[in-house]
Image 1 (cartoon, protein in one colour):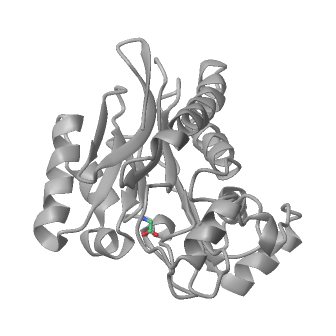
Image 2: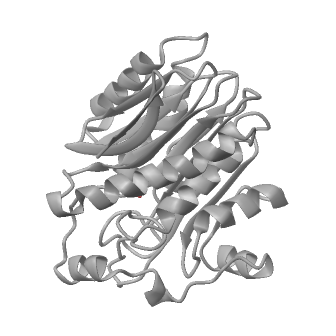
Image 3: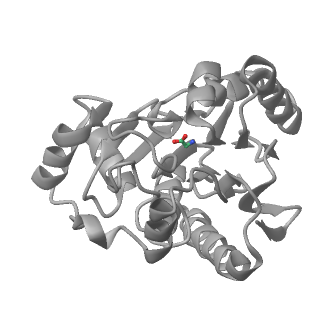
Length: 288
Ligand code: GLY
């Protein structure tokens, strides 16, 4: 089976021209990391995790390094991850001081006792599993600090995510974010919630979502989009219908990436822009 991969860098306001080239190269690098895993016979799960690590480490995306700040000036990251073959999931919410929260979500998944850890308990779990720690200020970029000082609550996108299909037919999805600018400490958004921000079922499809977290949770958007593909229904149409469902129900702003077991893809958004990188008809496409 031919593998497939889509990575995204969030939906929202248009990226300022000065940041466009760097964001484009960040998405390209994340795609290449995931794609190399897939073409070497690696799993969809490894591909989405490593693509997400690459974007968490990039300072111009709102996840890991470069996350937006809470109203208290701290970084709290939300992540979820799902393997569509085993239905194993791992998620963490409002975690601080973790270099790559996607690795923490993966450790939660692998441990298997629970599927969703938050805050202090999740951070303790990270220490027990030897995951790299980051001091609070190591994740805060000058750009996000300036935005926080200016009390900006809107802006260009930055949540990151990936969906992949591996050569064995496995699908997986991952999403990671610093959330929304100026959020209350302890707020957890859709990116940590399986069924809302992330969902995968290898017999139907995989989805990662970006946008207004509260609205996306209300619409259980990722699961809705995947269910709309049941029976081999058209992927692009399912993505559009899911987004229309969100808009009708909540007027929220969102974007989503979808893949089905045949590698057919859907990338839709109702925001001004959405960054994504994927292959289409054998050609690499990156847009912001
Ligand atoms: N979708 C990202 C968030 O609302 O936290």
